[in-house]
Length: 99
Image (cartoon, rainbow, N blue to C red; front, side):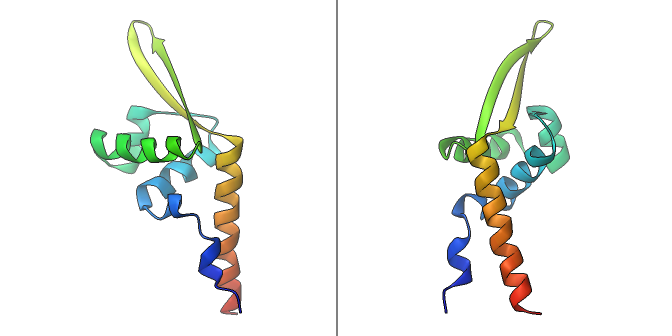
């Protein structure tokens, strides 16, 4: 029997990365401060986990301005959405094995 855990994506092993992608899957984009508040993490922790997802090309960073204030938004890429869906399917397969 194949190992069902082999289909898990290591990028989503960290709970903050899993949460970030969960938020981005149901929102077109999300701003840094709003994401930080929602996930209740520090600036540094969020930045570190975002860098990890960006390295995998799972998220896109959109920099801009709101008035004169810098504004950073994040968006899930097609690759990121596909990887996240595959990860969720692997979880579902494990759950269904227990039935």
